[in-house]
Length: 155
Image (tube, rainbow, N blue to C red; front, side, top):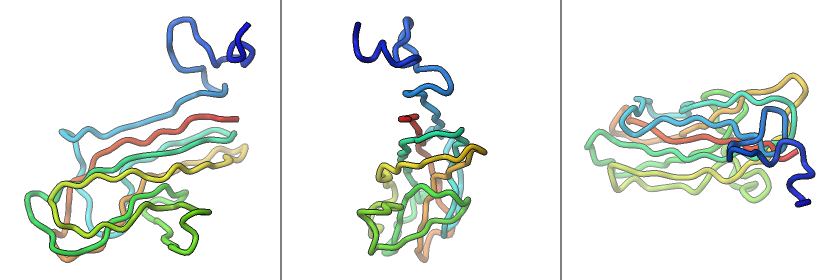
């Protein structure tokens, strides 16, 4: 008997993810490049995941396209938040809190960036988490975003 077979739901006979409520359960969503959504400068929710009680490992990736307009300067963060359209940026707690990845100076029209992994203990009532793109720049006023957002139940 393998170790994994001893954990209910972790191994399936048809190579699918474990069932809802079991360790290894995957909840994910994505926006394809072809279906990218237009967002404005500032803290903007790109997509969200609603999770049930348990310990979860979250990560995501956001790509942006400036509609062919070159942006000479600005900053862009991506991160995971428990509040829609809001990303707390506290550079003094990057290692412990890890709500964002590094600052990027815009020099290209298409960029992509991954979030740091975030672990969350979801309460009994459940919770929604948001993949946030946070940008500050002069031009363009809007940009297109796409990406993926994933959560794996670890306990």
